[in-house]
Amino acid sequence: MKTSGLTLIAIALGLAACATRTDTQVATTAEPETPVEETPVETERAPGSLDIVVAPNAGFEVEGEAGVRELDDQRSSVTIEIRGAASNAMLPWHVHEGVCGSGGAIVGDASAYPPLAAGLDGTASAEAVIDVSLDPAADYHINVHESPSEMDTVVACGDLNQG
Image (cartoon, rainbow, N blue to C red):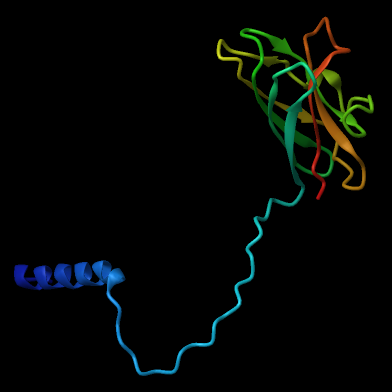
């Protein structure tokens, strides 16, 4: 089917007029509409996922974000992104039982957590797949340690938001 050039121009002008009429007020004799009360929209996260803010401990500048996502009934994926580390630093990290500062046990196999390898700009990211499904009723946190030889020094920590 052929469309004439004049028809195409008319269609284009009509569409342009619709798109540019946002600042034009149209008078109406209809009754004013009753205002509809808007319900705030909550951002939904995927079932079985958690978000974590990783904050620096006193005297350190490492901070970032982390997330936990259930892969199935027996495995979880944990991701972390940090900034503020020393250039080329290697920082071990783990999910632990309990809240920050509690010193809880590592969740899953410690070797499943690859160290954070900071670049020249002090940023790093890593992912671990652990053979554990996190209990929504339990407390967990993520620790970032100063180095493989300084595991007792936690430079940043974040409690998992179970909310």
